[in-house]
Length: 407
Image (cartoon, rainbow, N blue to C red):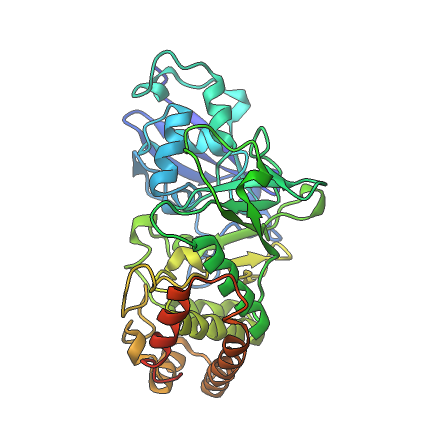
């Protein structure tokens, strides 16, 4: 049994640190000396900066799990269980999940064993002993973070999408239909389309018939209908990567705490400190829009920043905009706005409080919210019968709008 295993952490293809597993499934992260000494170093994450903007270099070890920043690179929920089974790893042993899935993580991070270290025999302690070494490569094909089944895919000349043999280089995310709730891909497509019409930064999206998606994995059962394909904003033409991080990573919380440990006000404060006026406008637009559509699932992992120049943060393009209230009636947002998370208390007074506490310009916040409401009504009236929405979704949003003060 190996007592120590080491994984290299790469950013834009260059080693910047290591994750080390020692006896008892303890994990330690450390930056490389060269990365620490580089004054022009690319940013790994805002959570690695102290109050003076200096790089933090001293980290506590974690038990069984890896530190929150790295834990948030991994899938959650059913997807994690599914991939862990394919990799032959206990889903709580995150060090080995990163080892198996590290070639295709969100953003510009990759993780690989140092010096080609062999897979430790105790990594498969809870797995079927008859599995061969190929099962880890099979797991890699579907390595994107999230709960819903999301796969990395490559667009084909014939107009379809295919899941690559390995999950490396895919430039689209394919989100499959839900078994519990009908019409979720169409719902998300419609909400993202509305967001773009209102002026938000939305990646390319398309609805794709399931039979146009090649190389879907075995074991997910028969599916029908349409999937949602979203172009990855962390991948460029030619396969280059762009670094991103979500706000669970920024605030250093584990994925299961994504509803608990921060608020929209906290997100706004980071954007005020790190971004520009355009980022503040985009933040308020998204906050207002998701309140209007009744998206009760805009948690910390559904907000991200991006590093276009590797050093300076900006609000990343939008994703995961779904009207959830037609499926699970809810009067509350996933996070507090400032003092409350109740949709029916999203008012100009609440936004004024948010602006004051997050150090955002009050006039800019209120003007943006008012403009967003006006544009939403304009485009909702024009498009709600043209978008591929179930009648119950339209009815739920129409009823919900009557309860929101700012609407």
